[in-house]
Length: 437
Image (cartoon, rainbow, N blue to C red):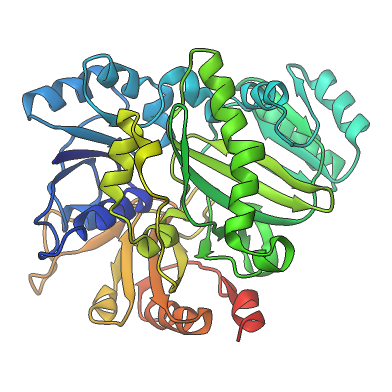
């Protein structure tokens, strides 16, 4: 197929990498893949086009002018902007929900309402439109306080704190942009589970765990994610097996949600991201997203043995139920994010990145680009100059027979990459590596 992948981050780089490795021939021979707008790392793998991924008309025009057969939408912004609707109404298969269903991520209040009506287990919440309402809800729920921006906030809209002053300040800030939710604090292990949906059926991918806090030991502010690993061997201790856990999520969370949206004539066609927490009272939903998670995608897709394009197209065309359950490798995968100085605040950008050649030939290792570009002018030696353009810059991903091996491979490459002021966590998957040693 000729496939257009919309997005510019490491998640999209991971999707493209998975699509390119399909088939028995050399990489890149199965599909004709184009990315928009992409980044420097993606551009090294497939053609990129300067296209506004959030503009439904521009995307639709490009698709028809270039005979694109299938569109995969990576980030949330094009979904909320209605790009999938514009394509779907013109008969183009697209992986990604329409604007109405994407409100499951675009509005946390909408998601809570859907969960309540579907009987999906989640924490209590109160929507606040004014500071007085927020303060009353904070007092009612008590510490630790959970404050969430209702709309899209690029991973920066959630604050969990025992500091009432900080919680109030966070609510005050985000009330300038819309409603906020004050939620019940839920304690336990967090799990990310992706489920493909064609509007009536779901197919699960393998669970992953990500690390939202900036610093080791889960210290520092929330980020878009600083690392992840998959699978989660410790799920078997509580549920008997990963499959049993996944089946429970399908029956109590995913299918009720998809069926509720279908009943409201807003079918969810795409990737249902379930952000879950394992509380003493059972599995609870922390949040839903309407697309592949970042950085969990970077560790889930390398383990996927079923062709990704087959699954995505089945979801887009309503034939998911006819597909066998996705199959995953027994190998583990770990990713660590390299971020710019001062991320997640106002990251310092424009600095040169060197040392990526250290990853070339490293067993089981790949480098996925999140926010990079090449200078138009090479350096004095005629070599291309790669620069950071955002907060999360690179993902180093490693697969291996054990978490200890995968971690050694990741950090061995990271130590050779240089970006002035760069920061990354050094404890990604450390605990699970010790537990299953």
